[in-house]
Image 1 (cartoon, rainbow, N blue to C red):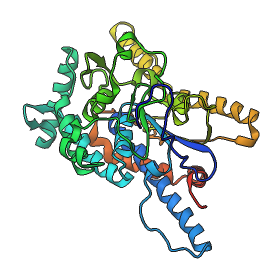
Image 2 (cartoon, helix red, strand yellow; image 1 turned 90 degrees about the vertical axis):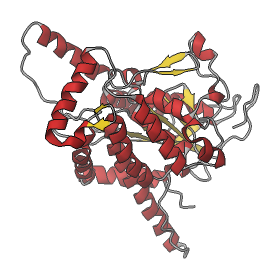
Image 3 (cartoon, one colour; image 1 turned 90 degrees about the horizontal axis):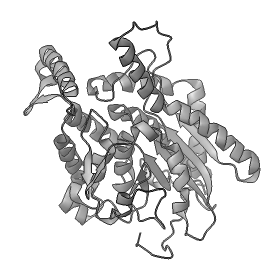
Image 4 (tube, helix red, strand yellow; image 1 turned 180 degrees about the horizontal axis):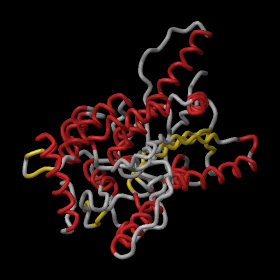
Length: 389
């Protein structure tokens, strides 16, 4: 988009087809667990292709075997942490789900593998994994980030170099600017965008007001959205330090809903939303635990529960679901479809940095997608997004 002072030109056309209604996507944070949300999103894209090709058959048109891209169906996306990385790949680089999934495997290993110098400890077998686990705990206790940001920057360079949007991306890789005209728009939490908004988001700090978003690079945005406390150190952009938004907006559904006005001109009314899709990165089923002994163990248990509470993505989903139902009651003629998918890992807790658990997480997600109720909702979501006109 071209930066404007009083008006905003090049207003994007809605992806929903002929109606003036927009589609929104929210991507939870969760480190390596983002692979789960990508598998679900690919399932939805594949179902959209089936629906559209069924319509083509009825109209006597040829089938289109191409994999559908999320950038062609969502007008605006918001992501936190790993969700921000996914949004960068899907909307800034306009990648397909299958390509993001393929890149995710190598990216997760590069970023979340414990290392001593250039040695990847997990590659040394059981003994290496044991030493790696101890090494990560030592780094946390001594106040250091568990993982280095260097491998993340290399991974981002590799991704942008492999899937450039244009010649500038190809040449600069991760140092290419984040803000660039493209088919899709994404925002990490409320601040970092790949488009120039019609007017600044509020509230903002004095430092954030001076931030030149047009100079932020893909690599800087990727580091900022990935800087989970204790896992990666904060990213500095133009003198400001950024953590990821997991402790405040691990489920950025409210953020993507609040910035929907960015889709229309400054003096236009709030746009109608056709469909909202919210994707979790998996969750463990609640189990009642025995009381913890007093002392340090009780303190640590309280801290763990506090972090779990403020990062609870399902609680935010339930609040938003209730609010959108109220919204629809008042606007029956302009219903907004809302879908939330979040695979269960049963009683197993998967740490956001444990990339060795990714195969198990993929299996949990595929089992979740086989549930009849989930499959029915996938159908409904794909039908709301498919373009059959």
